[in-house]
Image 1 (cartoon, rainbow, N blue to C red):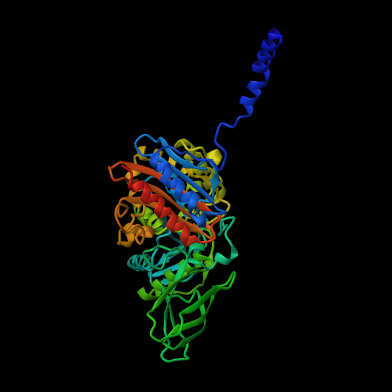
Image 2 (image 1 turned 120 degrees about the vertical axis):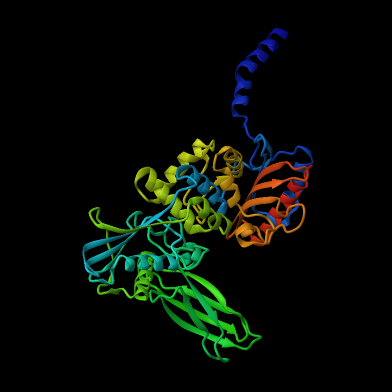
Length: 495
């Protein structure tokens, strides 16, 4: 009997036990998380006891900045929506592929003979992706044309935006976001109204009317006839409500403004995306020509500049190292998508989302990121179909510390509690007390039902921790921000 029992045990050890080991999961179940030490205990308490997290998903990952050791995770390997934290991947890939000193070029060509003070032909404006062209840049271009002796253009003004493809919106952009500044069209030729560089937008300056019952006074910045305002607003009593609604008709540049504004209200600024920004850019150049006294006989059109045309001007943008400040500090979606298309253009000679995202995936893999675990649908994080594990975000933030461009990347991140807009960025009104104030640099993110934060925090002992917090399926976005702040405070207080 003992021999039979012994034989059974041997057979069991040879056959059944290996099968049990084979089917045993290597990772803990999705809802399990590390529970070592006081750090884990405090974060676990927040995640387990916070009522706003009931029914939601919270991906949290914490690493040592010194050696990359994973110190804490809660479903850190689960893919979740990153929102604008996606920009960490885009900025890193762009710095690696394009380089800190990379600039965008805008060119002006003459198609025709210049006789005396007259261009006997068309003038072309060819964009190559610059999202930072301001009205003053068009003024400088017009002034240079005048200095070259040209005071009359017999032909047309032709906008060339063929450096990128003609797909203006990323795959998952909602139609309701078309007129919003954060959903502006992506074009190789575009213009920005001010130094926030929200390319492809105009600013509506809205003042109360001169008396109760009158329409609000609305002006456009920069001055352009490219958009038309339908003003259906009403000035109400000083105790009334500011309730202005703005919509732009699909495929049109008619902007409908409705609602009420109190009689004593301060001026309000509202950004609106235009339809076909390449024509908008050319309209601004034409206005600059008028200021310089350059007469244009033809119309504004679109077309393609040819290689044999005479180049009159080549304008360079600020370098990528400087562009990263408004891009990351203010979380500029347009900049992210331009960088994606530019990477596609530089590497594959195709300025498209498909080729740009292909480059991003490849470059991130070179940095040590498991790109097979990422679902990248755009560069900004605006898509709800983007999916990224928290552990891969902290892995990225660890690996980029070794890159030669890391200081530029680090400098671009918003600083907690720093009041200056181009320092604190989207973190300037958060974590304004010790120990977080100015000790946390991180990228924020938010979509409906999503709140995210990822970056670096200096602890009370002077060590640096890397963290990523992805909160999905929230009912209260504001609560998500508060939960993130509580978790980061726990990290900042670590000895």
